[in-house]
Image (cartoon, rainbow, N blue to C red; front, side):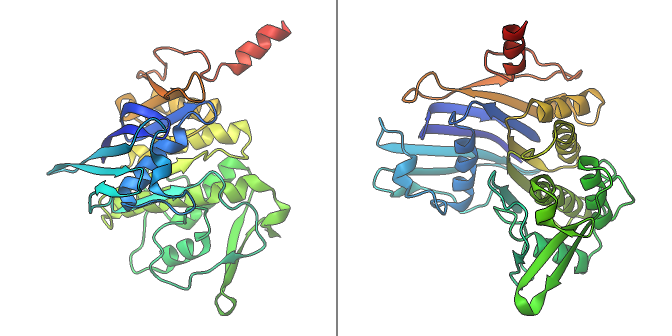
Amino acid sequence: MITDLSMKNFKAFEDEALELGSLTILTGLNSSGKSSAIQALRLINEGKTLAGLGSLREYVRNDSSESSIACTQKTKNSRKELRLSFNRHSAIICSNDKHLADIVSYISADRLGPRNTLPLSISNDVQTVGNDGENIIDFLHIVETGDSVLLVPAALALSGTGVRNNIQEWLRVISPGVKFDYERYVHADMGRTEFNGHRSVHVGYGLSCTLPIIASILVHASQLSAGDIKTALLLLENPEVHLHPSGQTKMGEMLAYAASCGLQIIVETHSDHLLNGVRIAIKEGKLRHTDAKCYFFKADAASAPTKVERLTIDQYGMLDHWPDGFFDEMEKSLMQLI
């Protein structure tokens, strides 16, 4: 498990340290640094710049010549710091040679929505759904046809213990009555998903964008339970995207259940409904409140360093305080309407 993350002169951060839990929630206004915190973890894991995000010099704060990011990896028998330092010349000064977990799955906010076809890798080494959910067909097929039978942990199981059945049932929680299926056309190197017998482009964005999140949670939690992997870290950007508020709340509950099964999840969100789902799960005793961390990111000006405020959730799902700008827009709007 990754217990903390520190960032010095990294993008919008001057000097920030975050304590991470089994479930860590990152909230805040747009361009306040939430995605940057996730990028920091991805950089440490990869040990090099990330595809599509430019050279390492672009991660260094404008008023500095060098950046450093680090986290602590804690296992049953050891504790190790993983660090990456670099300067404006894109030179890596110090780096580690170890990944953050056995499985590190990053799913982006702009993941693939409805598509008539999806690519197949025609490979048996697909371990995650991919940054954009592009590997979802291969991911599901390899899991279903693998040598070991994966059983979904009780905390996440809605229908028996099979992964396929529970993907179906969690999709129904999001959209009651939906039926999911997929097909592979190996000779054409492509596959397709369908909902209620229709191609996904006729069903809207919510289910297609949610499928890789649900599949990742159920598969990786099952792999942990079976002992196939020892650690798994999910980095999720806006898992609630395109969902109805009730579906967003259920997504929050699912994330809490997954964290109770051993998955470590760091989620960026703009949804108070998702946060409330996590709080409900904590109140109902599905996740220990000490295992959940919540942070509010804010910057007073474009050039000002981002400041991160910790919010504590108690055993009843209550927050210790509610800073200005933290999911309070409904109250502010209602005050204007009264």
